[in-house]
Image 1 (cartoon, rainbow, N blue to C red):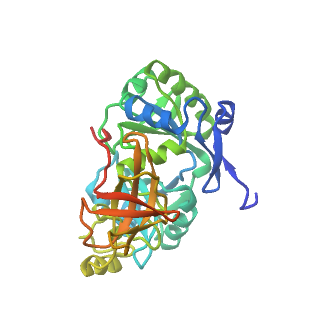
Image 2 (cartoon, rainbow, N blue to C red):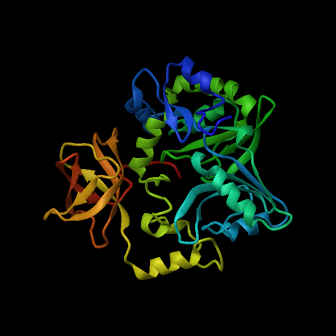
Image 3 (cartoon, helix red, strand yellow):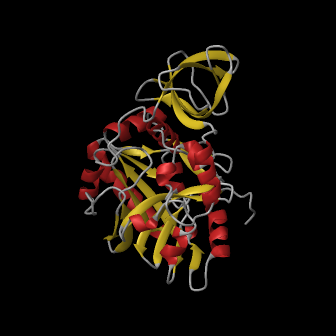
Length: 368
């Protein structure tokens, strides 16, 4: 297969049959929205009821063998000693300069068995770095082609899970191994929308039937299939970082304000010295939120200016908030720009007024 060939999800035919608008996402043909309302309707369904996403473009890597957990703990930023088997943890893979190669979730099955869910475009690089560093006895496998991931999100997700006879109600950032109609399934209390929900990791061959069953089970609850367009507006309302926007090889966890996912007291992790120095120096720009008060929708890479027209930041993500019905953005801002400060965004040569606001822009129920 050519490296330029667009990849497709195991559910591709389901999306095209529903008439989804498809687009390239990190080399994958994925649904952006479906007919019958589009992004706004899908976004609202998740905030108020329930929605189903195909996120099978996300990676899967298996790290196993004696000392697997301790090995990963010496590589990634967060401290795996903080969690026990059956729990998941958000963490980052940094380079030696502190830049973020990828942010991912680690699922700790046992001390010698950890499942990693990296971002689509970065899976191969994360696996490469881990393989190069792995000690004897620890194996790192890219098992992306074996699994599909479905994300059921929204305040009524528990009722849908109950209707399917699947585990539900376990703690946020925990997971359980289950079966659906005799097929193995990992049920994770995680997601990227800010709402209560579940991510279901299934074998590729089981995914189409599972998708159909969830769609049917959602119908009495006003649920609907949702594309990655709504996933982006939902995560932006929550202020969640997206790799390539709020996190990148040039944007460190210090700058992105994701230092809560760094085990600062650990003796070793990739990028530790650079991040400690940057945190101590207190010179870099920091991520913040902007609530647009004028008319206009901010977009990535647009400049943020103060009242005198001096550049004080740059947009990393911008969108229309379906919940607030106004523009919102995440931006890297100069230190000292305080919450409540009035600024302007240069939207294609037009100055649009905005106010600095600490995310989230709306309240979600993810951890309830």
